[in-house]
Length: 236
Image 1 (cartoon, rainbow, N blue to C red):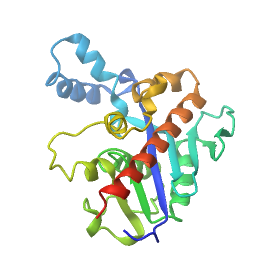
Image 2 (tube, rainbow, N blue to C red; image 1 turned 90 degrees about the vertical axis):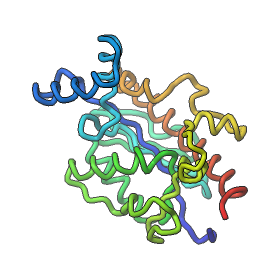
Image 3 (cartoon, rainbow, N blue to C red; image 1 turned 30 degrees about the horizontal axis):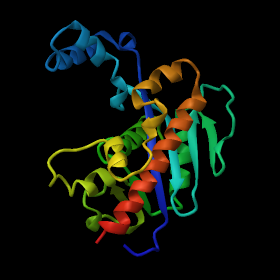
Image 4 (cartoon, rainbow, N blue to C red; image 1 turned 60 degrees about the vertical axis):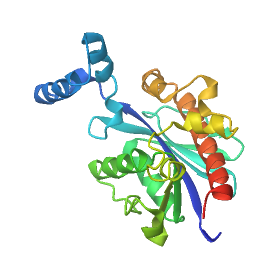
């Protein structure tokens, strides 16, 4: 791809609602769904704690963006009105707001870019962003799901999902996590700090917003480094 693209790495962090806050019918429907994939009550309770995987039972608490060319970025962070420092590290800042406000900030920033780089973004980040935007009555400024194949996507909203690219759109049969790909390519994994996506809900409950932002920034930089490997050696 020519170097005329304005590139932006994107990654989101989400949390689910508490299962008990859902209405009775929703609880019953989800329980029937979960029971298909669980063996006992312990596994069932674990499933109930993963409602952040779906935009209808979760919300976005952080949207990270990072320009791999300038090495600058920002984490739009939901803080429930509480203050947090404004910089994670030199070049990566924090802007705060409620979910609707951080979505608006993201889509406004997205207007300046025409290539969006994610890891598993077509399956998770992009649909989550677009659906949570609609639920919050925010219109996305880019269609990040126009077509799975980069060669068929509109120039103003190219979406390079590295999970798709490194797996050659399913040709490798098995999908691996960002952590696996980073280890294989000699890139520091964002999980090396001991924080994973599973920890975000508790961090959010505990008001440890900066820890969420710092973890998100690690995902951004790792994805950017992985993109560079793909772009240099596998992008034809």
